[in-house]
Length: 72
Image 1 (cartoon, rainbow, N blue to C red):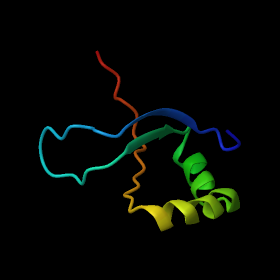
Image 2: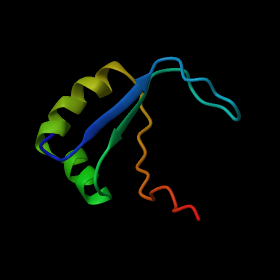
Image 3: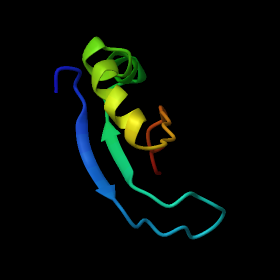
């Protein structure tokens, strides 16, 4: 919350409809901007907590910055 993040959802059994993906948990966190996301990602607090995550699992982290385009 200090960085404006909002937990959206998670799923331990997301189904792949096309392509390949490793099994595991998917977590979606929303930030107001990529800058806010990167401030959180690079914060001392998160770096300290991430040590535990990295020791316990393998992850793939991505940042998506483009919102849903407006529809006519």
